[in-house]
Structure formats: C-alpha cells, structure tokens
Length: 110
Length: 118
Image (tube, rainbow over all chains, first blue to last red; front, side, top):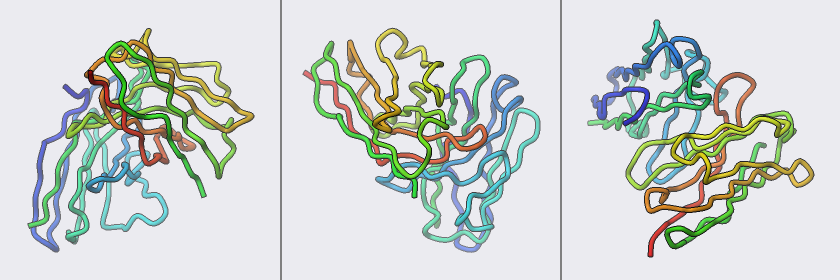
C-alpha cells in the first residue's frame, strides 16, 4: 500500500492530453514539493517534474505539473507513442522522514 | 556528467547478508544527500534509506530499520548499503539516488538486483 495514491492506469490516443493525479496528506504533499518520475520499461526512473511544476533541462514542455493542497497532477499534452511508460509521483514525508511514492500509473498510448 | 553505478547485488539465502555499493562521479559527492530506493519485481518504487551529505544523519524505512545500514565514504565517492537478515520480501532492484538542490531525487543509477531465495 503506497503512501501516495495514484490511479493504476491511464490512456490516450496520440496527440491527446492526459492527466495523472496523485493524492497525499499534510505530512507529505501538503507540506513539501511534489516530483514526478517517468520509468520506461526495463530502465531506471528519470526525473520529469520537480518542485511541483519545474522541468529539468531536456524534458519537453508537453509535460507539466501542478499542486493544490494535498493533491498534485501531471499533464501530458500532444501524447506520443514514446510517452508510454510508468509514472510515479513522490514527495518527502515529514512524519516518516523519508521519500514516499505513489503506486505508479501505467500510461498506454492507444 | 553525473554517474551512479551500483554493484554488489546477487542471489542470497534468507537470513543472509549482502553489501551494495554505488560509485558516484560527476558531482561533489559530500555536498548531496544520497538514498537507496528499491523496486520489487512488477511493483512500484519504495524508499529504503537516506544519508545526509556529511554522513551524520541517516533515515530508514520501517521495513528495513535494524537490518540495513546506509553509509558513505567521501574518499572513495561511494555510497553503501549493508543488508543483514535478508528476507524473501527484500527481493528487488535497488537503485542508488542523488538528491537535487531541492527536495527531489535528481539522478538514479541503473540498479542492481538482489534476490533472496533458498
């Protein structure tokens, strides 16, 4: 059982926009920034969004993040086949003194 | 370029021990907190442990507290995870991870597989 809650799956056709949500609590998302990771099959996770809505260099602006209260979301616009991957939200938890992750959302590009 | 290279994984019997290493390069090692995060086969990411840049503070997930020990060697730019009393449920790919300038994990190693089985 993951501390952060994500829907297990999402899908969309090429070119469409999809949103992945992440729900937490006051000790994690409510008090710390949210980060998003993309994990392509058979590879290590890669930082996609940090500090709620910041993109590392090299991440396309098709990816955007937002946060409100104890929830956050990742939006992917102009969906492409190479976006098919698992997406994880994460935040530092002040009660656990550690990172907490969502269970992951498997994105399928139809 | 930041590089994190894990090693030390393998097959171990229940109750056994293993030490993972993570060789870091491309950044000032002692300036950044480092973590271990694991992923059981077909499952999601699970934080295991974090150590501060100077090594003076360590944090553990309840599932490994008292069994695992995180440490770092500044002279070798290497992060370690000593794992004792291993259980079947510890079977996972273990990733070494570098914190960024803020509250986020910025870089991940390629992972090393630990299999606990008789």
